[in-house]
Length: 162
Length: 108
Image (cartoon, rainbow over all chains, first blue to last red; front, side, top):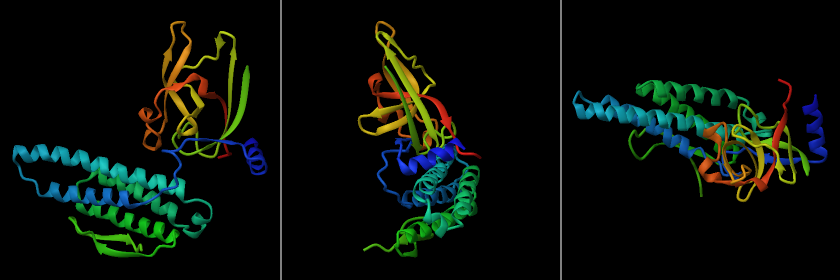
């Protein structure tokens, strides 16, 4: 009750705001880093699948798994910021499935951390494509799908700029 | 000197202790040589030279030869969504707006 009273007061006479942001609130949001992290998770899975039994490859396995987990976590973090800080108010009304999609990405990111399956990683890439399409649509920017111009060369959503 | 301020929190760097959208009551006092106790673990609001008004948790305290707080190191509880401690740097005790005394949350 006290909170709602203060909210009303805040609308009439705004209280000073104290920032608990990830960085200075610059207003720059872009899903591209998360897409690249998701693609790299898939690429790591493919590289892991191609490893042999040599000691050299076993050492490489350790590095690839560690990096894959780091990048899967980075996907979750980037999406959390865009979902939590950028999408609000009318945008949430316009995209009612966004909460479910963001939650699915959290689950898919965790699954990709735990797994070395390319299919699991592809699911993360696909969900990131859906998220990216919605993000650019919210900016009034059209998107197109094309294979990314590097391995793993899978279907990726890009904004039509310029 | 006693200062009491009511502030609105925006952002997720102090999640879950302090969520975005809540209000916090912060207070600060100083009387001559006596000053409010600020220690590691306290959540404070400060006026940062670069980031403006920010709310973070104290993680290190620098004392002068008389045991008075001179500077503070701060960090967010939710490290993945916070400006890093290194980026914030040492913060002078003079820039402290106040220590969080009460958090006013929305009804669940």
